[in-house]
Length: 61
Image 1: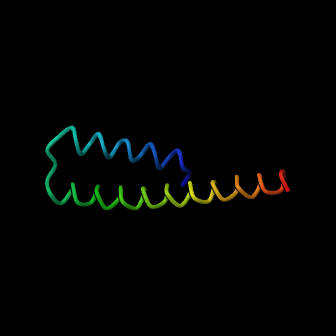
Image 2: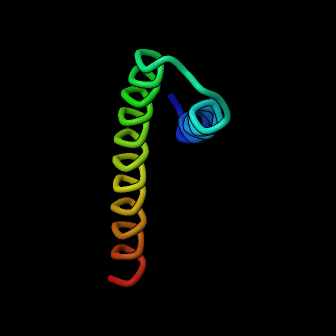
Image 3: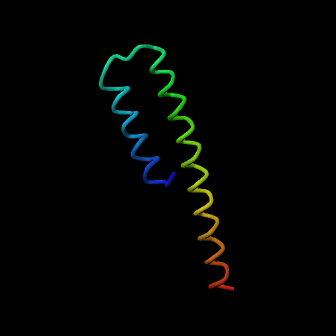
């Protein structure tokens, strides 16, 4: 999965959960999916930040 796809899905989940009354079980499934997507996005951003810092280190060093 790519970062942009994960963000798009998070937006869809957010709209779905806030726009209608879902059964509790479906809400819990969507919440679990969203939690995994957030974890993926945080890791992706951390990796990207590290790569940028490494690039800056080689340019400055």
